[in-house]
Image 1 (cartoon, rainbow, N blue to C red):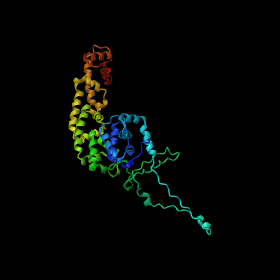
Image 2: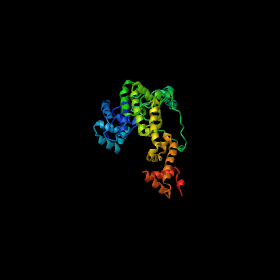
Image 3: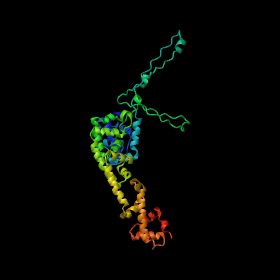
Image 4: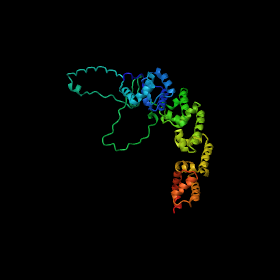
Amino acid sequence: MSGWKRQRHPDDVPTPVAVAVADFCRRARAPASPALVREALSVLSAADDGAVRRITDAEPAATPLGPFALVDLVKGASPKQAAERQTSGYYEMARVSLEDEAPAEAEPPPARPAPAPKASAPRQAESKKPRRARVTVSDRIAPKKRVAGSEPPRPRPQQPLPGTAFLPKRKLPPPRGRYTRVDSSRSTYEALLKPDAKDALVAIVEQSATRYHVFRSLEPGYAGRAGQPLSVADVEGALTRHQLLPALKKKERDGVLTAVATGRGSEVAAAKNLGIRPAEVDTLIGELSLKREVSEIRERFVREALDPANLPLRLQLLGRGKYLADLKIERRFTDALTRDVTKLLDDCAEAAKTVPELVAMTAKKHALVEDLLSRAVERLGLARRYVR
C-alpha cells in the first residue's frame, strides 16, 4: 500500500468535486459517505481534480466503483481492474492504511536540569511542587487552530460503564447558537447560492427526475440554514436562485403524467415508477397544478375497470385490492362484478349439476379463464347460490 499516501487534508477537497464523486459512486452501485469520499480524494493533489471531474461527468464503465476505485482510475487503472479490486476488498486495505498514517510530530525540547536544592533549606525545596497551568473558560471554548496539512486528532469513543447496557439513552435536543455542531465534511447552504455552484447543480438537475432526487443528491454534502439538516425547501431556493427550477418543473410535469398513465391511474404505482414516496407524488401534483390532468387519467381507467365489456380484465383486477382502493372504486367494482358474473352463471345454471361444472360451462361459453372465474365465484360469495 505504498502508493496510497495523503497529498492533502480531507477538508481541503473542494465540495463540488466531492459531490460529483459521491454521485458517480451512487451511479456505479457503490454509494459512499461524504467522509469516505473526502478520505479517498485526499490521496490526490489539487492538480488531479480536473481528471476526477472528467471521469465523474461520464457514465461508469464498470460496476461497482467506490471513491477509492475512482482514485485508482485517475492513477491509470482500467475500469475492469478497479471493479475487481472493489469487489475483492483491496480498497478497504488502502483505507485502513490511510487511517494508520499519522502526521510527523515534533520532538519535545530537552528537559532542563532541575537546580540543586539549597543546603540551608532542604525541607522548603521538597515542599514546593509544580503548579498546574490554570485553564480558563475562554481557553476551553476557543476555536482550535489547525496547521495546514496536519490531521486533526480523532476523539476516542466513550465506552459505556459495565452493567449499564440495558439503560435507555437520553434523546437530548441538538445544540443551538454558538454551540451548534456542523459536520466538517458538509458545506454550508450559502455555498449552494454562490455562482460557482451552478455548474454542479446543472449536472445534478440533468440527471434527476424530480426535485426530491436533487435533494437526495445534495443532502449528504450540504447542510441547511443555521446548521439544520438540508430540506427540500432549501434545494428549491437554490434552484430558484440559479434559474433552474422552471426547467426542472417541466421535466417533473412530463414525468408525473407519464408515471400516472403507466401505473393505470394509481399514485402508488406512479411513485414506484418515479422512485419517490406516494406523499411526494401528491405534493408534486398539487404544486404543478396537475390535479385536472391526473383526474382525467384516473377516470379513464375507472371507466375501463367498470365497463361490462371488459369482463376478462375485471376478473384479473379482482385480485388487486390495493389498486382498486387507490382508485377509490373498491365497493362499486365489487357490486358491478357480482351483478355481471351472476347474470352469466344464471344462463347456464339449469344445465349444470355442481358449482365447478357450472363454472367450467360458463367459462367455455364466454371464452373466460376458468381459474379466474372460479376465484371470482369464491371471493364474491356466489357458490352458495348454486349449490344443490
